[in-house]
Amino acid sequence: MNIFYLSAECYPAAKVGGLADVVGSLPKYLCRQGVKTSVVIPKYRTDWIQDQPFETVFSGEAPLGRDSFSFEVQKKQDDDLGFPFYVIDIPDRFDRPGIYGDLQSGAAYEDDAERFFSFQIAVLEWIRSLAEKPDIFHCHDHHTALIPFMMTQCHRFKSLQKLPTIVTVHNAEYQGRYSHDKQKFLPDFNETKAGLLDWQGRLNCLATGLKCCWKISTVSPSYMKELRQQSNGLERLFVHEKQKSRGILNGIDESIWNPETDAYLSHHYSVQTLEEGKHANKKELCNKFSFDAGRPVISFIGRFVEQKGADLLPDLFSMLIDKGTDANFIILGTGNPELHKRFRRMSAEYIGFFDASLNYNEKLAHQIYAGSDFMIMPSRFEPCGLNQLYAMRYGTIPIVRAVGGLKDTVVDIAKPNGSGFTFRDFTLEAAGQAVERGLELYQYKTKFYALCQKIMKLDYSWNASAQKYIEMYQQINSKTHG
Ligand code: ADP
Image (cartoon, rainbow, N blue to C red; front, side):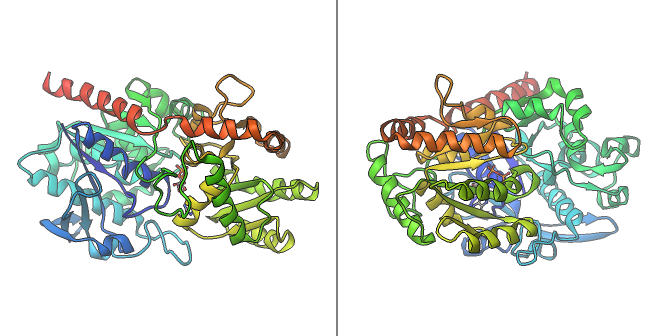
């Protein structure tokens, strides 16, 4: 089988969040299991992309409304990512360091529609020229969700109309919603089918993809169910498309997220050497923030957006510190400017107990997973969540709100097979109680380290989930060839 992954992100080329981690790792596991999976993303001007040797495999020109644009498809010369990796070079649109917006100001790029429409058009233009077509187009999130529509309705791509498509929803909060006048950027299509582009009066890329694709998947079984009740306006559509939908849990890339080999850590450790290993990493982390390493460390890593519930943390951490809780609190993240201000104020107010690194820092993220005792995730919703999986792999106990993928991956310690602390309500009280239960366990070192060892041994690698994707591909393939 020959699968093409189309995405806006792929680690290590371009990463904003979990989408990159998934697209940069699942194909590796699929290729290893004999399913050739190529990844295609736009050619951004990131440091990593600039350092790689690429060769041009296709040059073309395609329409974008009344204009046209030139593009090149370039392939990474070696396959050392573990899968064939392609970038589409559209200089006017993607030759910028940011993925979705300006890195300095954080403002979203205004030509979002033109950027991702042209990317998708270029992909199809290239693929229609290939003698050997992919067996399946696997589109990830709204940036590539117009592909199933264009393949079936645009006259230009008629030769691709029978090829199967999958849309994976990594986060339905972001849908690519535009006014209908952006339709003018699409190549000529069957006008009687214009309704497919519409959802609640707007052009909605994700909704269009969900309607037109063969199969829908999302990144955890619980999130799949939740989407039918709450998905930023798409609830009815998820109910309607239920028969072709399924949830498959994300996994972690063991070649990157492994405390025995992690290139970002100065102290490696395994289940056997957990206690010394965590101790050494914690000491280093605490030195960095001028914390007392004798106290437990509770950390948060993530984007400051509604979804992640980071707005609960200032009051939660202040409440705990004001109460005299003997713990250190670390934040790594960026987003809502108001929260930046609050965290900055707290760093000044609670010197030696609280600190925030308000940036994107891959190395520090790894050091925090390794050097913390607890990782807190008070998410309002969470499609899968990778932080809790990385935390567990590094023997760091998750404290999570039981929603979406968090509910599917973290079992409260009060139950058999417990792996962390969970809470239900999005309130200070509920989150506070969960943290306090964690800190209570920390007092009993034998029990505490037994739990750290147990969660380190859990298998959240891609092996099991990659198999589920393969089943889905095989089902689709048997329909086309059966
Ligand atoms: P989402 O994709 O919704 O942001 P996930 O939990 O799926 O959330 O994935 C988040 C990924 O982004 C993880 O790899 C996490 O370590 C990383 N990450 C988030 N914020 C930062 C940051 N400020 N610095 C470094 N890594 C970060």
